[in-house]
Image (cartoon, rainbow, N blue to C red; front, top):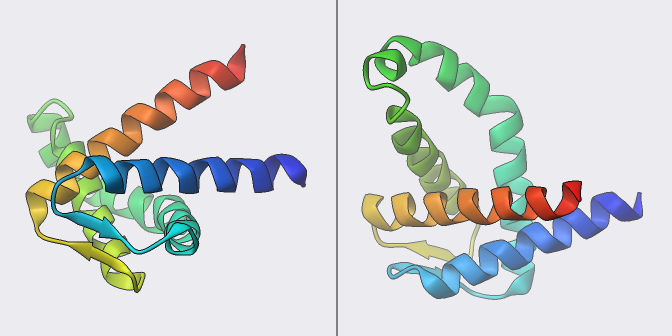
Length: 113
């Protein structure tokens, strides 16, 4: 149970840090980042697999690069759902989704050791 809460807090910290780094992305506070962490996790668990399956031909044709577009669009959807997140456009969402992915991979590398 405590591990789940710790992962939630760390993911919210990552989202806050990405909001600070990314131009065009404003996150009101840590509570907003906590809510965004839950929303992004739910979107990635339930909506993303369906979209990935539906866009499989495009993804194969682009050798997986289209996944970046899907991640950016899902991040835009999460920003739309969570009050307190201001996102200027697609390019800000793309940069934010790439940064969140990079920091999540780094976190998972340190977690496995």
